[in-house]
Length: 273
Image (tube, rainbow, N blue to C red; front, side, top):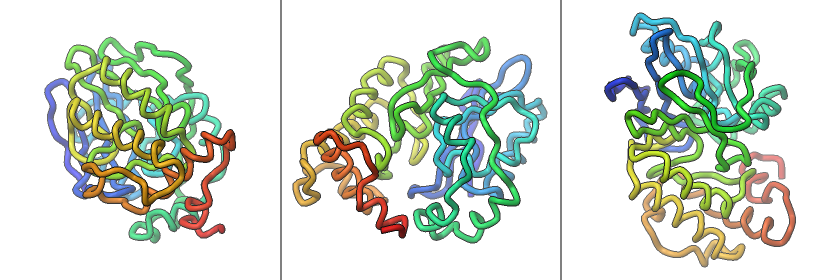
């Protein structure tokens, strides 16, 4: 399911699988306790993360959501006491009832666990982050465009480390069905200026090379102009989640035409079209 990796003053919970829905989480140590970044896809996965973090013997003071999408919040019921941080957009999404059927369609291997979400509801955001701000003496949280217009990243400046969460996906195709691939690609320039080590939401820990590969992929989706067969060659041909290529390309084309709506390819994958 995952393991806690010691990175010095921080930890990363690294998932055992590099595929959509199999996410990583982060832990930052401060004098008053811990900050956890993202809470896994399902209640069971969140409980496993909580058990590993709880074993560190320090109170969990804060939980930060880099996205409102289920792979980052679905296990948050395990974290009962911490304050919950997210952007205004993430907060608004967390106030809505989750689309369980859609989540099961996206992550069929985890469908049985996702079905119990109504009995283990996700935490809602208690503190919104509207601009870059120090949450503790060790970390800065900042909104950044990614798979949403307002994702969140967590920077640990002393370690030159970024918990990028939903903003980064290495070796796993990112999915911009509700985002803006062009804006996401541009925001990665900002990310590169914030650190040198990146813990992505999906895939192994990386550096500038991995961020630039993701940026090139998003720009290739824009350049395809709505035609999946026109997607250029690159390392993304070997990434998992190949079904997301058509979604990203169609979404970029819709936005280029001035149409801000979910692509039909995403709706088909969700089973609603």
